[in-house]
Image (cartoon, rainbow, N blue to C red; front, side):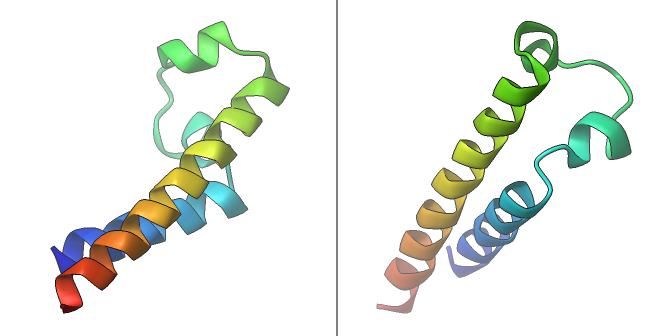
Length: 66
């Protein structure tokens, strides 16, 4: 569970720092979220998702240490 917590924390940080990393960099195909949201709303969506991943990763990491 510690590894999952670390991975989720890293993805959370990545989404907070570079919310458009998957839009322009890794996957060239257009996801449904990219088609439905405006660029500004997509950035907000990814940052919120990053914050959720960050908090969940920290919680999982702390729970695994007990």
